[in-house]
Amino acid sequence: MNIVAGESRFGLNRTFAALRHPNYRLWFVGQMVSLFGTWMQTTAQGFLIFELTRSPAYLGYVGFAAGVPAWLFMLLGGVVSDRMPRRTVLVVTQTSMMALAFVLAGLTFAHMVRPWHILVLASLLGLANAFDAPARQSFVLEMIDRSDLTNAIALNATMFNTATAIGPAAAGLTYASFGPAWCFTLNGLSFTAVIAALLLMRLPPVPARTRTASALADLREALAYLASQPVIFVLIGLVGAMSLFGVSFVALMPAWAVTILHGDATTNGVLLSARGAGALAGALFIASLGRFTFKGRLLTAGLFAFPALLFVFAFLRWLPLSLVMLAGIGAGAILVMNLCNALVQTLVPDALRGRVMGVYTLTFFGMMPLGALWIGMVAQYAGAPKAVGIAAIASLTVAGLVWLKVPAIRRLP
Image (tube, one colour):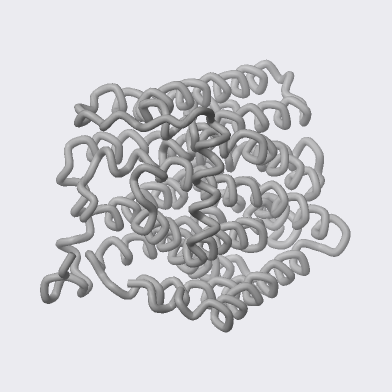
């Protein structure tokens, strides 16, 4: 596709281009409400588990429990996404997540919640997410034209990070004023918005998907394709590295708020919201660029900016400056995650999209529990600042290796 003159320049008039599609508008509003609830629960759950155990390592255990199902079922979720109507898959998974939120709310209201309850429910939520994430990633092209794909992915990040900017702060205030159970209840109610949006969509007929003899054969086909595409393979690897070394520090925020900054649940919420605000600004910046042709260079900038800012954050002990640095960290992270997503989806053929995005989401969610586990254990024995510093150095090492060994990434349009 030829890019018309000026279309790649920054312009606010292109920021919300994907919203001209009615189905995507429904998705955007429904997901925004649901994600707001999700971040309320995530924030409250992290602080609750820290209150119950006073253990940074246990924060890692929760992340580990949520991620294990990704290892076991995410690739199968990608196959299901290519074989079943994706809207149907999403309605089932979102309904399951709503039920789990209400169970956690009920246990907390009854003062019966224990750490093991949270671990079990986190595992079940991870199971639902193993089927939800590949379908959600590959569903985007059923709502929009291909020409608006990068914009839609950027707007997906925008809605996610709007919720990240507002939800944790709201959770901190709600937790302090009314207790964690109300955070979980509001999350359960928020799922009705995205479920309603999915049911209201008028989707065009999707061509029948060719089925091979077995799900295993489908999976082998996708893996063989990835083995023949080194650039896509590296992009997915970058997502895994970000999950393992980069965003793992988020698991420590409840402990950081209390032990490093001497705050409380409200402080924890504000820290997470600052990161979300920065990520929101980064996502809006990408969306506003339109159909730009320098994604590889922008991705490379994010690969180096993110760990540099994270390293500085590890040494900060003053809340206002910590919030500023977290905003920059959020912006750097979204450049990497959003552009990797857009580039992979642009390069992959439609027939393999669900399965490749299954590998993509497996890499991201599969590395996340390992990231939460290692950083929680290092923080337990060496302190949270050293753990964050190690994460920053590891992320910077990955950026350097990609710069030296895979120059093709910088040249991606």
